[in-house]
Amino acid sequence: MPILNRSIPSLSSLIVFESSARLGSLSSAAKELCVSPTAVSKQVKQLEAFLNTQLFVRKKTGLELTKKGTNYLKVVNETLATLVEESQKMDDNVTPLPLNLELGACFSHFWLIPHLDDFREKYPDITLNISINNERNMCEVTSDQYDVAFYYTSTGVDSEDNFLLFKERMLLVCSPSFLEKRPESKDLSHLWRLPLLGLKDAPSFWEDWRSWAEYSNTPYQDPLNEIQMEDQIAVIHAAQNGLGIALAWDWHVEDLIKDGSLIALTPPVECHNNGFFLTRTKNANQHSSERFIDWVMALHASKSQATPY
Image (cartoon, rainbow, N blue to C red; front, side, top):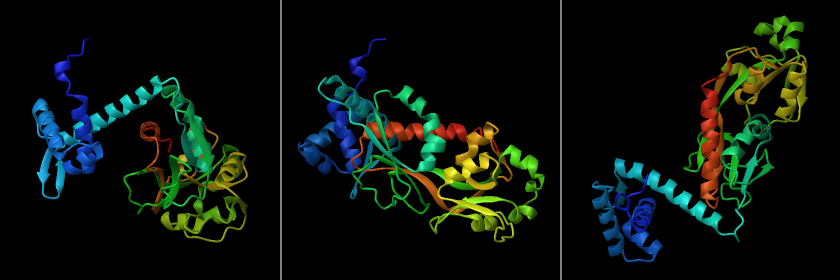
């Protein structure tokens, strides 16, 4: 199907529109684009006339997008980002910059790695560099060491570059062999006398057996038989091998429950203090970071519709 030029606005008007919308000011857009405010105003008016709709509401405090303007901006951003990305690929002397990811070990082990081949098939031109860091502070969002990072932190964190991926939902799991050997595990009144698996020296703001008991209305007692381990991967691995009952985050074990290597002894209970986030730095490659984050969020949404619990 041929593309009719008369149905497409000029590229310069789209660039002016994007800059004006992002900066919220015609004068700021003019300064960024090194043109006069009059030229920017003229381009915006011509674009509105071309589209036969109002894109901005002019206020004393600056520009405010209309509903149609907001929707159009999203399309323009995606289109311009694609043009930039594809144009860079045309230069035989340019090697695409890798996307640097800084992830927690659990997110990498339980969630990302099992699904990463799907991302590579969809975006074969995006190279990923993965580093493991379980202790990055959420305040360090200006780091030049990564483009996209994964955090566990308070849900009170508010930033346009932070994306809540997992709410904190915890449940008890064990292996089928453990449950067969100890069928009393289904009765929580026996819980504190059974072999339990937990974390050693976990940060104070992490949820634990005591806080889980509070959220689930289960009277807490000091466990009589608990193995403590350095990290949650080891805890889940021990549970798979029948060593005890593990306290787990739901997204850690959803695939393991689905394939039958673990059994959920309780439904998940939601803890309301913390959550798991993706965040990106201001200097991140916009196209690649957006593709990765959008892919993660879409995959999470599709998996959430088929929860195994």
